[in-house]
Length: 76
Image 1 (cartoon, rainbow, N blue to C red):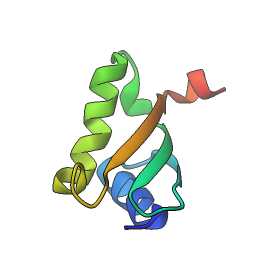
Image 2: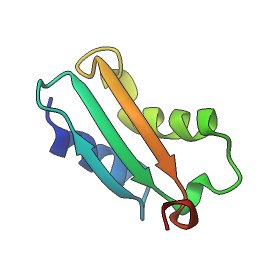
Image 3: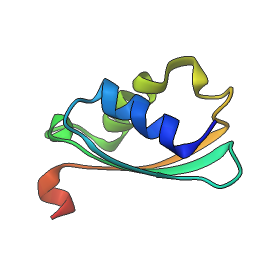
Image 4: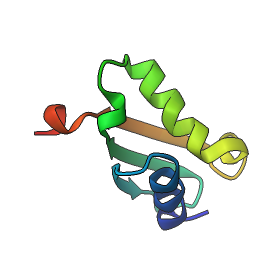
């Protein structure tokens, strides 16, 4: 697994999101996801939205994904 693939999957699942993904070892990643879809949602709900874009890869090919999920206003 690589950061670009994860970025593409998140962007496909959350159209219009701005996504940055880092991860050098192929199993542990960090992502910043900025999306209007997060407005009015608690952090756990936002994370679930991102996890849903990755499906069965979570816990398998992607061992760990640290998330920062922000609305465009929060990202400023």
